[in-house]
Figure 1 (cartoon, rainbow, N blue to C red):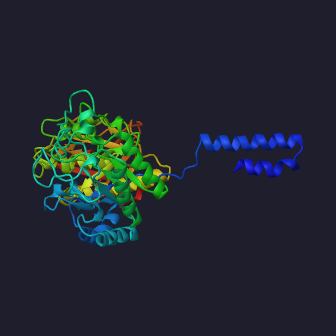
Figure 2: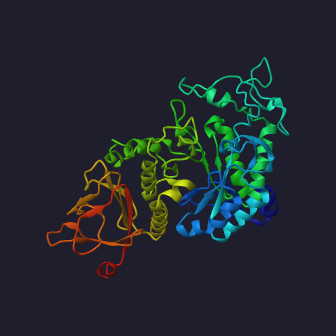
Figure 3: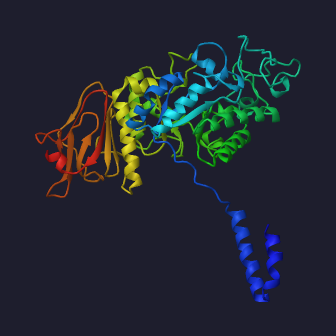
Length: 475
């Protein structure tokens, strides 16, 4: 293109002008090549509601209420036609990618998306691309001719017999060969041939065409990273980078987040394990002052998810003994500035402080966009194994008490913190004042009423405070 422009204009230039012209075009070409033009990627979610195993028509009824509560995204169960079993795990065993038949029809999903978009909620679809279904219950063999559009050559299998399981996964052998090439249990593993990629990209395109706003890639650590990158690039190109994607990566001895988070955000099982230790009986919340987590603010964080629940999963990953501990961990996840919280639908219903944590997070996001200080910092002013206090700059704070007894202290010195002014607790709607005294030190001088300062937090509870004009504390 530039050569044509050059030839048509060169005769009209003096030698000096010609040199300037060539130089300017060279700069343009260099800029285009070295710094390719990109539209801005979509903003990461405030919080994602995981509509785990729920019908699309059911979620449609309350999706706008979720938006009012502060959720920016919802996540559906896998949408492709799956193993016909009614069990939840069957949705993660694909049969036919050309058919939308997950927790409802394509029309049901489209109606949910339309309703969600009407109240500014976006929809993430779960996609399962690592494997196909185990239809006969035999973990060592599967008839690979059962799947429409696919042939035996699209799968990994033992060389002596098509359809025979080639190997078992070893998560501790120091390499990732078996994670990539062996079957996940009895689920036939893809080779990612040209045919497989064509079929799976068509599935992504179908979902984008009906309005899906992002994808969760199930079992991503069992797929080659270059294949995952190819799919993410395809989605970004098709959507003009308007979707938000993340990858399920369960870290172990052979797989780290860094194997995949250069492609997209990944699930933070490192933080999950840290929180599990801290919030479980005998754990110490002081260990979360500098939490062990994936070093990526995009990472998807959670108090628990469907892979960590013993009641529904015999292979649950490091499950809690007491699910209420996971509720408190979820409260902590929502209080943080870092991470992208994924909230299980069951937990949203069963722990009433969780929905207020979502609202807190939404307010902190808004105030951060206004240029206000919302930096997270776990404070050492409360030295307790069962109580954690976190400030969000000067704009809010969070306190959680995992203990079996009420936490009650008459004085809290906040001199070295960013907190000062009046703060309102979102769920219980009481106010707290942080004031500087004549000696220059700051204390909590009001906790609910002016009759008491310090701090009082009920057993097994989580509180979220946002900064308000000081006259709110005088009311």
